[in-house]
Length: 257
Image 1 (cartoon, one colour):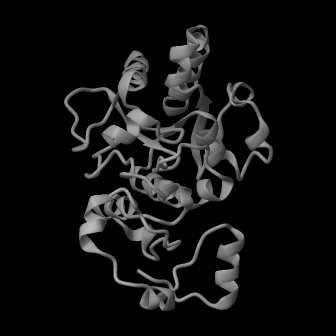
Image 2 (cartoon, rainbow, N blue to C red):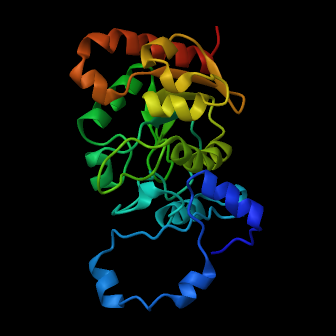
């Protein structure tokens, strides 16, 4: 997929650190060896191009687009993108947004995997919320939570995402939100909070996570509550009481008294 960009638009993308795919360069490049390519499936070329029709993609198309995305340097060396849904959830009252994928999430291709995921599931269960499955089915009266990461890739050499990479991947988050229409967003982690609040909290990138807690923000008109990631709570169990208060705050945003 290519974009018909003029010189000014290409310059803007270069300033953002996004490398523009040039058809001329592709034509001049030697043909790739299909055997060698099959031996290195983790190699994803940078394209810089987000699809022009992103705002109209359904869940299946969104998942496919994320799977082949090379719009920023986080995709370099990744084995697979981390995205929780191949089918549309029938409903999701909560969107739980986590930090960039860790090793467990990268290996399983699912947000909030392993012990951290088990802790999250137990925390949600305590407020009568459960994680929705890929089919979006519902067998009880619990509210459903859809889980995602603020960025979908964990590069071969793990590092923190750069600001322009958070911005690039936010385009996918915006589509997730538009499809889900959640009643509340629970941001679990510093980069999750930064992604959601960068437009409304000017110093969010340098504000400690603990100081972002305890109030309700807005993202596209949806209430946002910030809390600690489950992986942090596993290391620092004394903060579970604060996390419980955050869950109660999020619940109050869904069902005001």
